[in-house]
Amino acid sequence: MTSPTTPQPLAGLRVLDLATLFAGPLAATMLGDFGAEVIKVEHPRRPDPARGHGPAKDGIGLWWKLLGRNKRALTLDLSGPGGRDLLLRLAEETDVIVENFRPGTLERWGVGWEELHAVNPRLVLARVTGFGQRGPYAQRPGFGTLAEAMSGFAAVTGEPDGPPTLPPFGLADSIAALATAYAVMTALAGRDATGLGQVVDMAIIEPILMVLGPQTLWYDQLGYVQPRTGNRSRNNAPRNTYRTSDGHWVAVSTSAQSVAERVMRLVGRPELTREPWFAAGATRAEHADELDEAVGHWIARRTREEVVSAFEKAEAAVAPVQDVRDVMEDPQYRALGTITEVDDPELGPLRMQNVLFRLSRTPGAIRWAGRPHGADTEEILTELGLTAARIAALRAEGAL
Image (tube, rainbow, N blue to C red; front, side, top):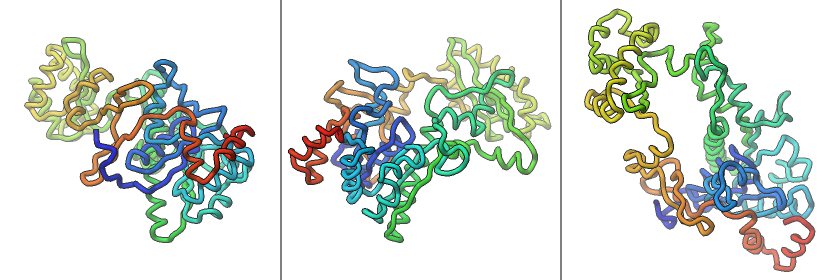
């Protein structure tokens, strides 16, 4: 694990994470991983629901340990005057605020863009919602699942004769988090040029639409609607998952023509490469049954280790279908340091995903895992200049 004392490229940047669940908080996590000071702001009596999502150990949510890493934990009731005033004071010395309330909520509490911009013209406000800040759906509850359905992702996922398929994890939220972190850094670059912050309007339904590729162009120009094709592709073949003799699965890709030719030579069917239709991915896809039968028959008579070794020697593209147990032991992930260990005062050593990418001069670091609800409230407010008596009074009135 990179030492927490190594140079951090976002050191000196302060982020207030007001968001809940996944897209907004994960964007703030990514900023914190590279040195930003992230303060997680939660309601005193209604913490981020992510703390209770998924399996727990000793009553402590494990997902939170990942999502809340590198964040200090503060409680504020933003809907009351005490919490409102403290947020505005914090905003004066903050670079980025990430929020995901329904449009108009911050404004109703008196801490909308106008008020925040007035106390700090350099502030960047990232607003992450299901459907964006305007439009007929803006006030609807928005979750990643709805974005996966609306964007076209579910429509193209699954077997041709099966139902549209949703991912068993937060795909749209995670894509939106990546996009939000990028948008924040873009807004900060703009601030460097102009001296002024701005609003980031991130709708979770949009980034996933972008990563689906040229579907909109295909439909606009050709009237073509991409169908569900299971593990197959309309653009190349063979491309599928195949079962090995020892009961494992491997995935084969032949996006490059040269790789497709190597695969067919490897599986003992070089004559297929001389067929006129083999010369292009789209026409190979029209013969996917024949190609899948050839590749699948060869793989089915060999173990996963034998298949991967043979493909590697042939410089053909293959990967084992791994579950998390395999990932934790995979030598490539180990070489990259993708899984790292973090010492946590509540649960002891934790293994989790490392920072998202490697920088050669200013690498990021995981300084701590997710903190208990409100664990840093007194410390943060003391740094803000509040006395112990004032903090106690705010706590008594329910603002903390």
